[in-house]
Length: 200
Ligand code: GTP
Ligand code: MG
Image 1 (tube, protein in one colour):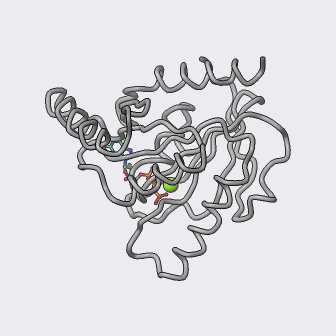
Image 2: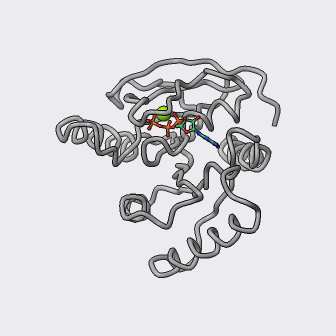
């Protein structure tokens, strides 16, 4: 897919104020600093469409980006960031949960995990929650440039093995790198396919 336009539309913490257009959307979720905002920039070929930072806790709201005037990418705050106060975490958790449970035009969630890490409790719990709420999701392994090809496939193998303790099959997944562009075509092709299903 060629992205011809990518525009920031609105930021807010209230799912009721998200865009009303009934366009398909795709949300990026995961721990702080995993690379959600960077991935949005990589996919859209825009350097600073979504704000990124080396310090976790950068994205604090639900951000809608309109792509090619007919679908949305949604950037969300990270979960599990220890340095945000407990009360701030609760607020995040509340609107993130509200977003996922109420946003009917959400086609699929992308749960981002750092390819260097073993499965983390918070990610497993979140995927479990998505499953229980019948919200489709794919996993995106980020920062693929940080490992050799060999190490990367070993990591994915061990991640899969652990996932299979909780899931009957490994969820659909992608491996990406926002610095090298790895996985870009695959993720965009998947979104294109889902957009087509949505419109028929
Ligand atoms: P929050 O908004 O705080 O939840 O973080 P986020 O998940 O949006 O992460 P963000 O995109 O801001 O990236 C965090 C840091 O990781 C930044 O310093 C990025 O440059 C770096 N980063 C993100 N993706 C990649 C990647 O694919 N490869 C490498 N090497 N660094 C990355
Ligand atoms: Mg962010």
